Length: 555
Image 1 (spheres, rainbow, N blue to C red):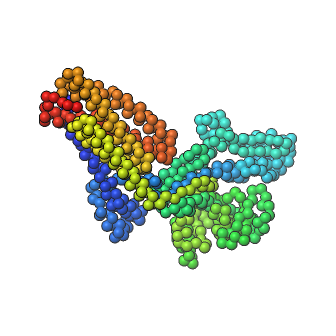
Image 2: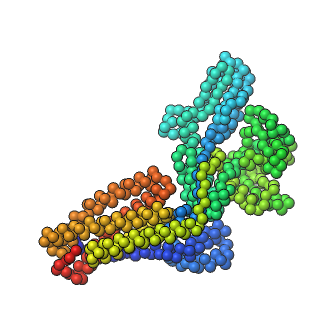
Image 3: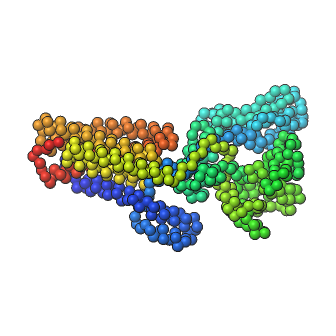
């Protein structure tokens, strides 16, 4: 047990040295962070750089690691939002987009069912009145040809549409299984779009997670305020191209089924009547960039994917001389008259906007449209001063806790306590090194996890040292007592750490926010503490035994 091969010693000390190397950038946090920010900015600029960025790059050697432990919202300051996604809007959109297809298949059965007419219905429900009530089942059969199997294990054997008939009215809505799948898909899509929007403006280490069934937690360290974050992600940036039915209409007028009234973006007192089903949508955009129009005013140039380009080209070719509306978030940005077919798949949005607004609109369109509206139930702004206070408080707590543990273990076990203290310091350094490599985020609960890990790491050494004491009291020689102490204590240490590791993983996967921050440092600390307590402490004791060869040991 006390014979450690040279290659094993090299591996143990090598791992410790790597830990110090990868944790070292955190001692020069501002310099390394400036270097990393400059590298990202240069990459986004296609290789172009400013003198300040070059100076920041030169501030940290290229051959040294540059990974940092990211500081969480409570340590750095920033904005926190809790948003609720209105998934009901997706049901309505699905039914509105289904209406043209349903009208087509029912029209094909006109000889049997007679004429059809869409009638008003609650959002998310499509109702169609059939002229020949006696043939309503024929209409149901035709509508069911549009249904598809639900693409999930829980919805196996079900279709995505629930189709019923009462009297001469056909009712179509999403089935319960499809609603569950749509809700999950909507939240996942919203998560991804919010993440892309936040990433577009270069914020550091945002935390964007799902909470409950239809809520999203958004935490962005380093951003100025919650209002600034809401301005970035609070709008749906939903772009559609809709046929125009009438202009200058009364906003109190009833648009009728399948139509809607939208105000002009520049003149809120002027209203358009539009077809609710768009020709193309922002989801078919492939790119959006800020630019200038023919008058030199700020604008946004956009381009459709092949499907959107075909639909846009076909519509403009069939409606030359007719107006169409470019609608952004329910407001008509522009309503030009189609002069000729637009088959290139590209276009331009211009109007009363400055360059910053054009750039922000391009970011939102490029990131994609949120599938449903999001309202914010909770918002908090944490100032950088409070973050610095949290860092100082956490640092002080960690130092006091570590020093207290070290003082106790040295007072209790003397020289062996010194060996345990060295392993303890190496353990903390290795936690920071692993977190730097992973790009993990450190929060106040994370600091608490590190402090707890310090105590647990000493527990492993205490178990070993107490076992050695028992062996010495039993009359064993020094080398034999130490060997037996390590071997006998091994199973207890492994069992304790495995059970705690399981609890940490449960907290990580089922918890959120502060709980996850605590679980991250706890689970990393468990792995590093097992290494330092069992391998590093044993190696230090073996080296001491080889040099001193003591006949007695007072522990």
